[in-house]
Amino acid sequence: MKSLHLRRLLLLVPGLLLAASAAFAEAPAAKPAPAKVILGNDDCSKCHNAQPADIAAAGGKHKSQIGCTDCHTGHRPVSAKNIPECSNCHSGKPHYQTTGCLNCHKNPHTPLTITFTGNMTEQCLACHTSQITQLKNNQSKHTLLACTTCHRVHRQVPQCVQCHKPHSAEMTATDCKQCHKAHMPKAVTYAATIPNKSCASCHQKAFSLLAASKAKHAKLACAFCHKDKHRTVPKCQDCHGTPHPAGMMAKFGKCGDCHGIAHDINNFSDTEKKEAKKAETPAKDAPKKESPKKGKKH
Image (cartoon, rainbow, N blue to C red; front, top):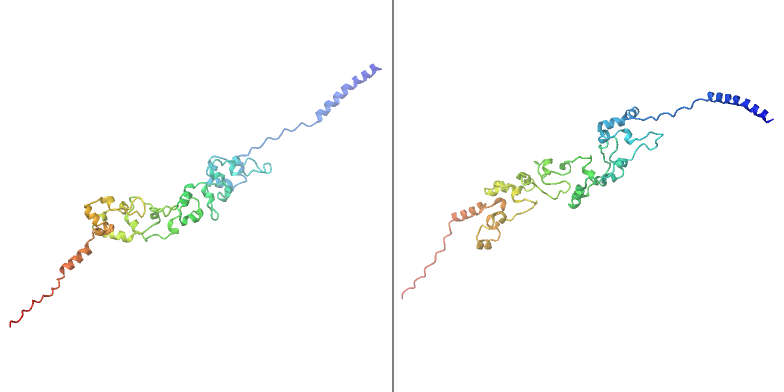
């Protein structure tokens, strides 16, 4: 019996092998996985026209140092967050800690085209630290203003005469900077070479007297005496030393008592005229004294 079963099994084996081979032959071959498509900048521009044009026109380093896929590492719907944060690349400086980048940098494809909305100061301080220090340490009406009151466009330096009237009709916008700094306008400074006519814009009387003077002072620049700091009034002794004996200096304590004011020094014309007039005026005859009357002889 066992031998009979064994023979039957042996007869079935070839049939089973044949059926199995037929089944494998009929099964379709497995398809290979599709190759991953890598997009390049040229591919992006096929759909996105405006952004490449913006970058080409004013992309800055976004044009010269990076491409589309450096920021946009994927595409929707596969990549749900394909709009990156600025801080992904920009870090390490105080300015990059400022939030709300798009408040000023409206278009990341033109990053240096900066526009302001409303009165802004805090955002400016991350880069312009020296200016705010000057404003705080030198209080003026400018200190109370927002940065964007004057700088309505980034890197625009306005002319002073847009708000302020010039000191004289001859003054131009460039003349203002000879004495005033915008962030510390009351701290008036000037170069030693500043022309006298610039001082005359405010100090007209002193300028006119000096220009008409025949003394050596007329040949000097205003800044020669009034140097280092605005409203400095030097002492005569700073240049002239002590030219007179001690007794005379003790009697006439102020140089101006004799020499007049520095801008019209040694102008004795008025005094000379008075003396001349006095000399020309004849003295009034003194009343004659009556001689004592002689008494009559008796």
